[in-house]
Image (cartoon, rainbow, N blue to C red; front, top):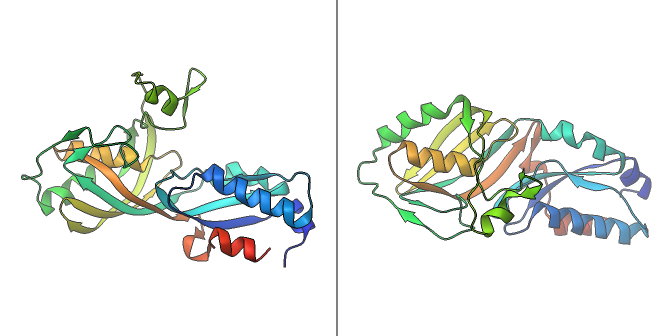
Length: 228
């Protein structure tokens, strides 16, 4: 059993984020239960890298003095597994928003998919989705997007170490990606669809690794709370 001093001195908690939870909600829930368990007025708790609400998987939570390590963990390489649905796009590049355009997939073959993947391995330029928590002129971009406004978003350099197609069951493609900090898998899905002369959106995502931390070593929120 962990003591109050353990949490104050610093813990790295590996949590398997559930579907539809924001990373912020996970942090709030854990902080509330730690404070309640040890009758604390406050304790620092933060996460090392946001997961979208529609993504599941590994979330690193730091407590107490270990919140100083958040930037270090955020900078580490990440691994994801997920599904891309071809033939349709959405404004958010995932299932958070409705389909806004459909495209033919009749020309798409397994060979074309495997050939196109090669374009996305290595250092590439990527434009983050407008539906993101990045700030533009002091405002979150998703707030601007929800107001129906259009803004110019600068591309940035990211690195895709590995992009592996694990299953093809058109229109769904299953994949595994190893990438650098700052990579948006939603943008990768959107750009991949474009490169196939079709459209695409991210339809499932799970973060499986951050650096040497693995989702297999994580625990659910309820499991963590029960163990307090």
